Structures are given as C-alpha cells and as structure tokens.
Image 1: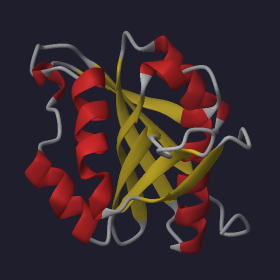
Image 2: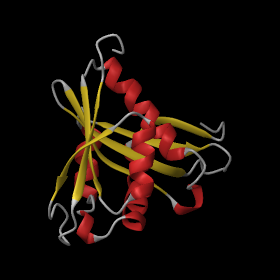
Image 3: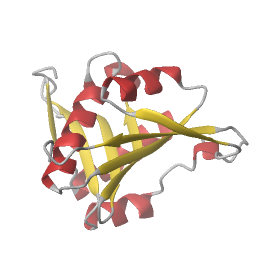
Image 4: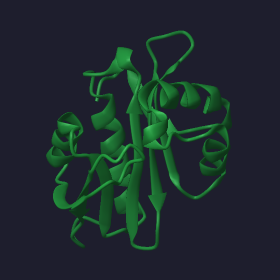
Length: 158
C-alpha cells in the first residue's frame, strides 16, 4: 500500500464521494448502489472501507470496498477505485484490509462475483488467494455471466 493512502471505515460525510465513485465506475446494468443503500451500509454492521488520499488537501476518496458480513462468511459486494487512482495499489490495499477484518470477525469464507470479462479484477482476487468456483449465467442485468470466486480461511489464519 502506498503511504499516500489510508484505509479506514467510511463515514456519513463520505456519502457524496462514495456516490461519485459508484456512478463513475458502474452502469445501471451493474446494479449501482443508491444513496439510500450507502446510508444503510454506513449504519449497518457491514464492512464499508474507504481509501483516503492523504496527499491532497481535501483528503479525497480514491476508492471504496463494501463487504456484507454474515455469520461465518464475508461477501465482497463492491470494490471501486476512481480512475485517477487506478494502478496505485488502492484496490489491493482495500482488499487486504477486508481480509484482516474477516480474520478479526473469525469468518471462514469470503466470496464474490465478478464479470467473466473482467480479467483485471479476477487477477487481483487470485493474487489474494481467491479461487474460481462457478460461472453464473445471466447474473448481471445486461445478461452478462459472472464468475463466483471464493477464499477459504484456515483456522490457523483466523
């Protein structure tokens, strides 16, 4: 992770920046998160992390990660990085922090769905140990297939 970023829990004051990142990264076919959905996740027990750029005066958001916490699993629901901050380790840093949170929460399994065409994201997840499990036909609203990926944490990793 670059020293220019800090990964921390999102705050209600981040709402507008979260919406901007969401709208810049996803289309309606990706089931973009709404203002209402972000507000819900900000107040819930789910994991909503932001990468805050320390190099700018405004400490703007470079990206975010949303993971839904279940009893023994964590589902990585959304990961997005502003285009100006891509290829700077932001997504990897957010993902690493979510893995630490999973260990703290003592979950044994992490899952996610990613477009079959999104090879860059699949490589990122594979570097963290995620394995492809199943292709899901027509998962996205535009009919595109998804690939379900999974990471199993051993009890010695918790």
